Image (cartoon, rainbow, N blue to C red; front, side, top):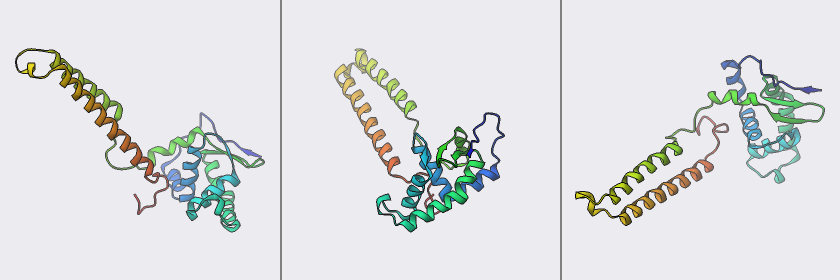
Length: 189
């Protein structure tokens, strides 16, 4: 028996339903983990990942009891609830689970990661405009601008792009090291 809930004419999820679905850390982890996987997966494998996350241990070091607790909870409660809401497709015969397109409907209810989020495409555009102005000043050989040579302009331009690239890289590294918001507890938010 397969529970396929993907349909283009389904009603939007109510706020109450989304809050109920996201109230469980296990369901948040399931949604997070399935997003990180590009293909469907077996319920047993998903249960192993949930248990590893909950016990903060590698999958290989899980006990049979830890695996079983996660599996039973997913099988009896969490997976059916997510499937009923249409966020996942769950084939009960094969034990295969995959995220549906509808899972993105809960995104608007998840808090952002906090802090100032830089729109890098706009940052690079602004730096490009500044660099064109600096280069033009270096080319103009009139009055006060005569003191700025093309070489100095080039050095400033390279410095701006280099500094921005380093900041962008460090920003990405910092974001990768943070716990995904889907998994954060109330104390970590």
